[in-house]
Image (tube, rainbow, N blue to C red; front, side, top):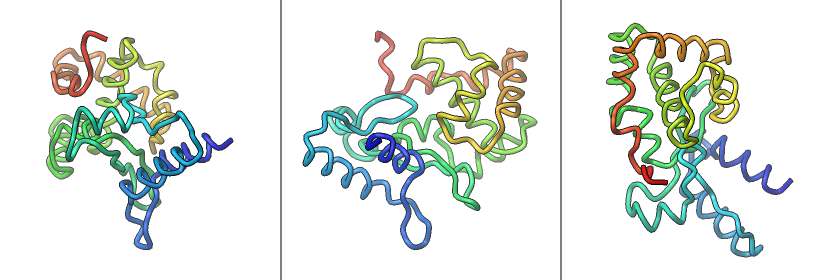
Amino acid sequence: MTQAYWNEWLWSGITNYKDQPRNDEFTERFSTKASEFGWDWELTCPLCRRGINYLKRNAPGAHDSLDYHHWSTNPDQGITLCRECHDVIGFDSYDNQVEERAHEWGFRTRNDLQIVRIGLREAIVTEESLRPEMAEQLVDRYNLIQSPGEVRTLLEVVLQDGELYNRFADDTLWKGIDRDQ
């Protein structure tokens, strides 16, 4: 029950009075409480599965904490990811650049591109192939605003077009993931 409570807070983010995420504060508060209670359980990025302590040791600085990624701001809906995963799913670009790319490639919004990138990174981490059947799992795990049917369609479109697939599948998907694991 306690783990479920903290996971809910972690995965939905915490906000200040302006509804802006305060991830650093949450991470610190959780880590302190976990230490006080002697819990052998640390925060992890749900996408790459790396723990906050690993990130602090191996990616110090801007990449050693979790960061809230908005799917929607009204209502607020998103997921807390490590900074590297956040950058990877967003093509390491500004939102307006990804939005422009989405329209150039024939998609509705940048979220469509980010969902495909999440699916590809999830496949790498779990050592599975990207499949349309992953749609429901992706919606649940990453708190997506799209329905499983919409996600399935996105994955089917990308998987049926080799050229389009190659636009999504680049070496940055492996950023921070040990290929020898």
